[in-house]
Amino acid sequence: MAGGAAAVFTGVAAVPAGAAEGGVSFTRVQVNGGKPIVIGVSEVAVPASFRMATTRKWKWPAVFLYRGNTVDRLWHAIETSDCHEAGSGVCDFNETMYFDPREWDMSNSEAGAWKVAAEVSFEGGGGDTDDKGLTAYVKRNSRLSVNAAPEPVSKGKTITVTGKITRANWETKKYAPYGSRLVSLQFKPGGATSYTTVKKVHANGSGALRTTVKASETGAWRWAYYGNATTGPSTSAADNVVVR
Image (cartoon, rainbow, N blue to C red; front, side):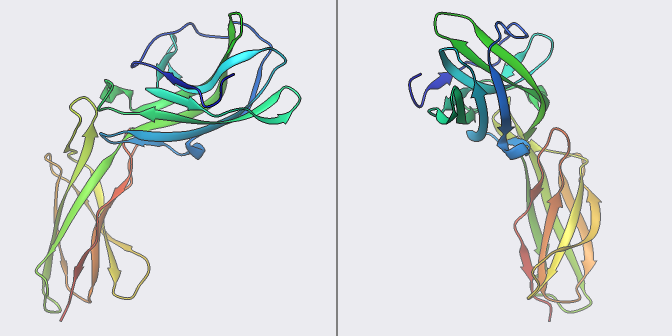
């Protein structure tokens, strides 16, 4: 096999399910360190790795994501490293999966759970494709903004904290309001190292957030959203308010 091979795939396609031929063992399969793959509206490079053992002559090994009975695949390009020998007929590989909504069509319905499989082609024809029994979540990125006012403020007075939550729309390649989400308002006193949730607020239908709190001490305010099965978590920047 030539080193550093890259395979390019133009969108989502259907391929036959199951193994074409045997003679290969795939182990130690991992995609993105087991964490969800969160994609915004620009390219994302996702690390993967696996071990392959076979006595056959091969080319183009890779792990990939699929779903459905027809094995619909999700990736835009895959780059696989050279074989790192781990024994006779045993190779360890590092891989990078590339996803880019700007260059390839992505449907918002593709967010969610995907299965993980591994495959290799043999020299002279044929190959092996194995379901690895793993699940990878592909999620749409979310964003949050924040503004706390007035700044500065007198102790005991009211602080109004506003913001907005948006989510990547892969089909329009833009961020759009993500309405009706439950978002946490968090506060970190000056000199502290961690935030505490003060209250939870539902965004309106346009993704706008608004609430009020009493000014007690100087510190930073932010919004935090914890995500769901199709959307990644996000945290806004901090807005510091001085209390006099």
